[in-house]
Image (cartoon, rainbow, N blue to C red; front, side):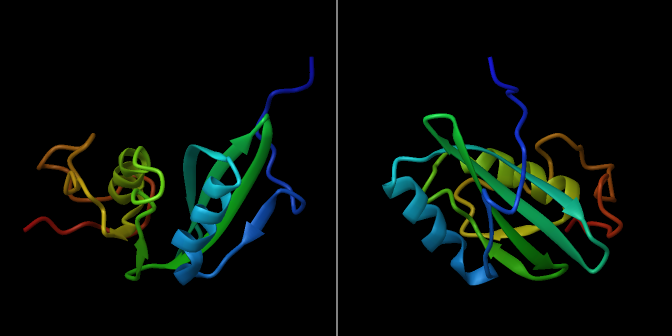
Length: 127
């Protein structure tokens, strides 16, 4: 049995512009790829968001660099289940997803007393 770890390489990862997230996700879905999950990392002035999809155990990744304070389109219109991971990334890294159909307002995991995104160096402001 092959190693089942998710490996991100240049061969299976495409760096895409911020405004291409919906288009590229739809292309992969139309090709039969399913949404696995998303991951992210704080890069200082920006956050790297990775979208992981697979088809027949072939993994494809889309990588987007989101400047802090900028919005990125929600892919929930393409993969409806993505709203949950988008809420998690919003809560933990402060990335704001435009068009998020169900927004937990930063309280999916955290409660009202939490005033900082746990995995990101920027704070969140509750209103």
